[in-house]
Amino acid sequence: MKVIIVDDEKHVRSAITMLAEWDKLGIQEVLQASDGEEAVRLIEKHQPQIVLTDMRMPRKSGAELLTWLSENQPHMKTIVISGYDDFEYVRHAIRHGGMDYILKPVKATALNEALAKAVQCWRKEQDERIRMTRQMIEMNEMKPHYTDKLLTELVSGQNGREFLKQIQDEFPFPAGLATCSVAVVAVSQLDHELFGKFQNRLQLIHFAILNICNELLRSRGIAFRQLDSRGEIVLLFWGPSEPFEALLIEIGKGISATLQRHVHFGLALERPYPGELPRAYLEASKALWKRNALDPVRIHREQSEKTDQASRPLRLSAFEEELRLAALSGSSDRIRTAAEQWILEVRQLDSVSPEQLLQWNQEWEWMRTQWLDEGQSASAADSLEPYTDMPPCLPLNKEGMLSWDRLQDELEKRLADASAPLTRLHASHTSFIETIAVYLNEHYREEISLQDLAARFYLSREYIARKFKQAYGVTIMDYLSRIRIDRAKLLLHNPHLRVALVAEMVGYPDEKYFRRVFKKIEGVSPGEYRKEHTIG
Image (tube, rainbow, N blue to C red; front, side, top):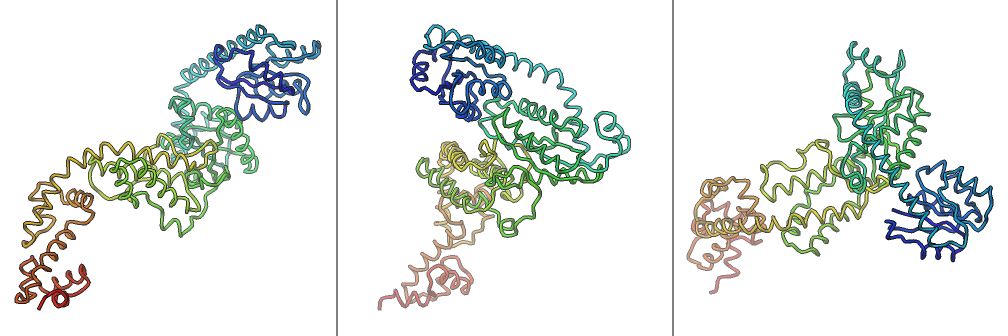
C-alpha cells in the first residue's frame, strides 16, 4: 500500500513521516509532494491509496487537490492536515470525500487513528470491488461468451441472411448499416508484470478492457473477444471515421487509468458492411501485429512492408550454434555475452514487430526441442505458423513498446534454464558419438555413407549428423575426408607409391576425385605436396 504526503513545509512532511506507524498499518511506500501540482503528477504515476494533504499551498491548494481527487481518483482515501480551524475548509474536505480533518501540530495518536481508519476503509472497499467484479463475471459469463461467439463468426465471414437477422436482433446494429470501421487491441501484447498482478487470470483483463470499450462506444459500436485469435478484442464502430479515432484515444486513456498500461490499436476505417468486414478485421489485426514496437504511436494502419527487411528477416535460429554452446558451457558470462550479441543484431533493425517477437519465441521453442530431443527433427523456423498460440507474454513495457532489458533477460533466462538438461544430455550422447568417430578412424578405407552409419548404429541419419556436428564442429563427411587426407599425406612421403594407389589405399577409388578433395583441404595437389615434403 502507498501513501502520499502533500505539504509545502518540509518539516511537517518529515514529522508526519516519523510519527506514522507505517509498518503496523501495512504501508510499504511513502511519497512526498510540496504542492498540489506535484502531487497530481505523483498520484497519476504511482497511484497511492491514501492522500494526506495540507489546505493552503502555492500553485494548487489542498482544496483544489481534493476537488481533482474526487473527480479523477474517487477510490483514494484523503486525510486533511491543516493549521486552520476553518469551517469552509472542513466543509470542502467532507464534500469532496475527505475522511478526517487533523489540526497542526500533528499528534501521533490522531494521525495513526485516521490512517488506520483510511486503510481499513480502502481495504474493505477494495474487497467489495473485487467481489462485485467476480460476481459480475460469474453472472454474465454465459452471455458474453454467446456475444463473443456470434460476433467472432461475423468477422470471420459468416453473412447468411438468417445469421445477419440474428445479429440485428441481438445487437444494436443500425438498420441499413452500409459501412463499419474495425479496431483491434491485443491483451497478449500487455506486459508480464500486469499478468502477474492479475495472477495470469486473463479473463479479468479482458473483462476490464471490454467494459471500458463498451461504456465509451455506447450505441455507436460494440466490443467483443475474438475467440479465434491470440487474446484479441475487436471494436466495431458504425459512425464516421474521425470520431472513431478520437474515441480510440479516449478508450486508451480509460484503459491507462484502470490498468496503468498504454494499449495499441490496429485500425481499418469505413469498409462495406457486411461483405468487407472480415477483410477489415484481418487488416486491423495485421496492422496491430506488424506495428513497429520501437515507435510510440498507438493507432496503427496497415502499411506496405519494406522489401529489404521483409525479404531478409532476422532469425533467432541463425544464431543457434552460438546460443547452444553458451547454454552448454553453463557459464553465466558466456550466456550473457551470447544474449548481448543477439541484442546487438536486433538493435540494427529499424523496426521490430510483435509478430517478430512471436516468431522468435517459436524459433526458441523449436531450437530447445531439437537440443533436448523432445520432438521430431524437421525443418526449422520457416515452417512455423506465426499465430498458433498466445505466448504468456512478450518483452514489452508498460507503453507497449519493446523493452531491450526484458528481451535480453528473457533470452539469458532461457539459456540458463536449458543449460543443466542440455549438459546432461550432451554427456549421455558423447560415448556413442566417440564410438562413431573411432569407427571412422578404423574403417576410413571403406566406402562409408551417412545411411551406412545410421543402419549400423540404429539411429536416424538426421540425428547422427546433428549430434556429430555438435560434438566435433564439422560434418561426418568432412571428418572422414580429413582422416583420409591425413593418411594420404603420410603415404605420399613414399615416392614409390603412385598417386592413384595412394587414393585407393585411403578410400578413394576415383583418382580425380581424390585430387580435388586433397587440393580443397591442403591447398596444393598431391603431386605438389609430395615434391615439397619428400626427402631425397
